[in-house]
Length: 68
Image 1 (cartoon, one colour):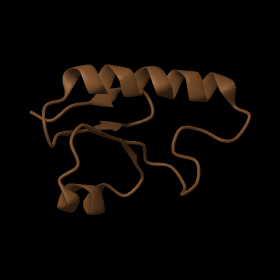
Image 2 (cartoon, one colour; image 1 turned 180 degrees about the horizontal axis):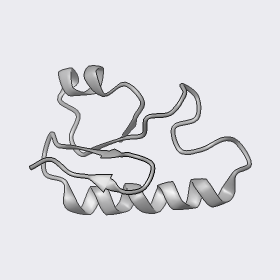
Image 3 (cartoon, helix red, strand yellow; image 1 turned 90 degrees about the vertical axis):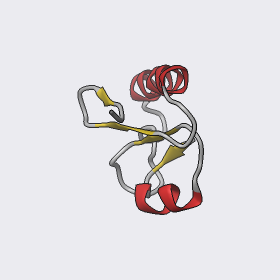
Image 4 (spheres, helix red, strand yellow; image 1 turned 60 degrees about the vertical axis):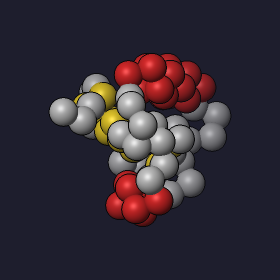
């Protein structure tokens, strides 16, 4: 799952979440920005492969950070 509201997502216990710190309505890039959307989709797939149950990765603009 992609989330823009990590606090709410943690409370719900959603498995394998990726937080993009972006404005509401643009979680994986603005409409028509295919390059950003493709890049972010790749990050989602990487996170899904790395995360365990109820873990959240965060994208900081350059790379993914995973829980320790």
